[in-house]
Image 1 (cartoon, rainbow, N blue to C red):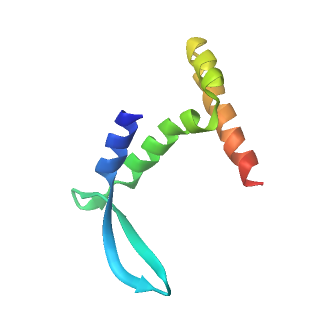
Image 2: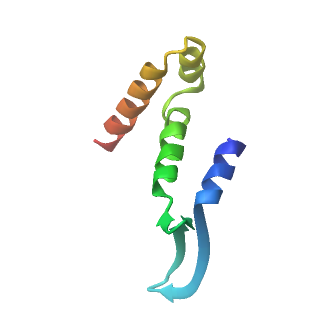
Image 3: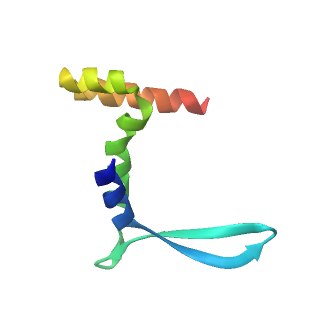
Amino acid sequence: MSKLYRRFSKLVFRFDDFENNYGVDKHSYYLNYESGQYRENDLIKTIRGALPKFALTPEEYKKLVDDEDLDEIYRLAFSRISQAKK
């Protein structure tokens, strides 16, 4: 999890906006801007790579990793996220 946090924190930055808008504090986030473009593709890859760790139970994740079934890991993870939206 610490590796994921480090990768994410290099892609997304936060700065505090101390203006109070209608009683709600706003925290602005922005993507790292490198070589003339935002790094949203890197952020998408990071989120996609982390998805199974959040969508699957630790037992499911361990079993599928032990079985080296990457297709099933992502199929099941995306299925869980899609069902959660409904």
